Length: 213
Image (cartoon, rainbow, N blue to C red; front, side, top):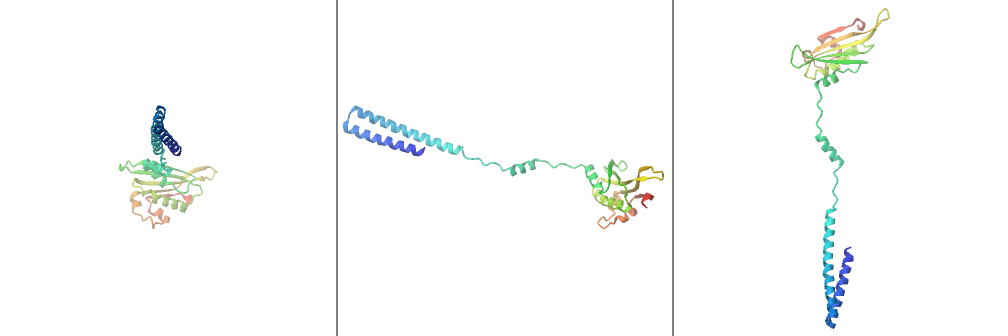
């Protein structure tokens, strides 16, 4: 576009010079009119060139590409805005109290009304047929280590249950091992060096069914 305008401007200038020379030589009214026309055309051409040049500059400025925001930056901003979800005490207790064994299990959490200190009393019922004393003690010990890291737990009791068949063939689900421990007892144990074989000795209450003896 700029090259074309320069060519037109050059042509107008040449026409102007030719007309000016004719007017000077002939000195006629018609020649003078040619000169005026040429001057007008030249001025108009300068105006057009200036206008187009300004338009091209503004167009170039306005069409400057805007760098897009990277997706990773957007995701990082969204993550910062998201507040971490607060995990409830009961959820923590249930997760820690869950043993690795157990065809069925249920965790019950109650307020310790005796102490009335905001502490919890936890009851865990685990059903596992063919359970042995050593397996129950081992799994309970692993869970106790985690449970008593939660300061709100005042006491926990594990009820290990199994299906028993009576002499007349009747099947019932009964507790075959009951293990109870308080926070005070748990705090007196060095868990890193503790052996589950001694759980029946240190527990506040340990009741074993004859079927597991």
